[in-house]
Amino acid sequence: MKEFGRQFLILQVIVSLVICVDLTLALVSPNNNRCSEGGSISRQDAFKAGFAGFAFLAGSPETAFGFDNKVASFDRPKRKGPKPNDLGVMKRMDIVGEEYVGLKHCGSAPNCFVSTDNIEDDPDHNIPSWSWPEEYGDDRKKAFEQLVSTINSYEPGQSNIDGGGFKIITNESSYIYTQFESLKNGYYDDLEVAYIDGYGKRNVQVRSSSRIGYLDFGVNAKRINYIAKDLRSKGWDAPGVEYKTHQNYVIQNEIE
Ligand SMILES: *[C@@H]1O[C@H](CO)[C@@H](O)[C@H](O)[C@H]1NC(C)=O
View 1 (cartoon, protein in one colour):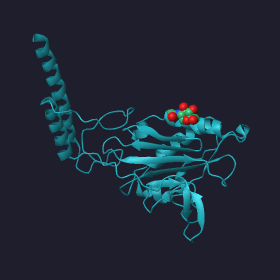
View 2 (cartoon, protein in one colour):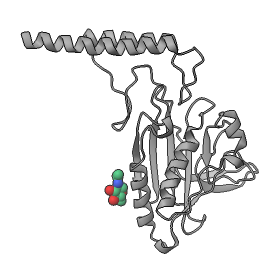
View 3 (cartoon, helix red, strand yellow):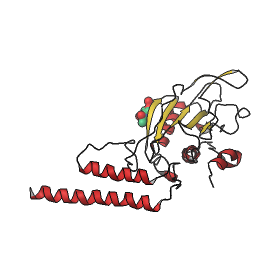
View 4 (cartoon, helix red, strand yellow):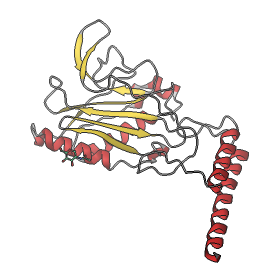
């Protein structure tokens, strides 16, 4: 009984601390505070988080959000958005009505990049594909094992993005689909890499996109660039998102 009392006291202290942090956040953050992942902590949200702390104390079940490798939890409503039903490699149509096989188009919002669209059709969203090292020849298996290990070594929270962690959902011999979650709002982003016939013998196509909202505050570029950098360190030709050729994205998302 005594032991239980002490544990309860410790729990109370922890919960009080959590609430204090919440309230401090509420007091110091101006309402238009832009957080790293495009959200903002409003006073109301902070108070809600405070109440979540009380709810926890009262014994209601704790709700878990995010993937296993998330950096932290934020107890607030999550807005992951519906998964697009036309991800993957399939027949698409370009703006002049010609068919091609590729990844999903980006919409008009500056929160998506894809390598399979025609660069002249959509220069703001187009990025180069990635090529595995010449010495791998046509060893696609080796290339895709490397892609899996690169994705799995991704650091949730790097550059203050993807704090909700990530998970490889589909791992096939020429297609890898991964979901990333933002920390505070729980937005889901979709990352796909695919080998598609007809694009070049050593080429891997890539697409990274937000599901909902308009701006991404640089998240998709930062994610792609982190992964591309790791691939380059393994000998790949993987350019990533060049800011100087994506000025509309840079300006709208206010990336320095
Ligand atoms: C992905 O698939 C490859 C080949 O089938 C397998 O070797 C690897 O263990 C898988 N990795 C993950 C993370 O599922």
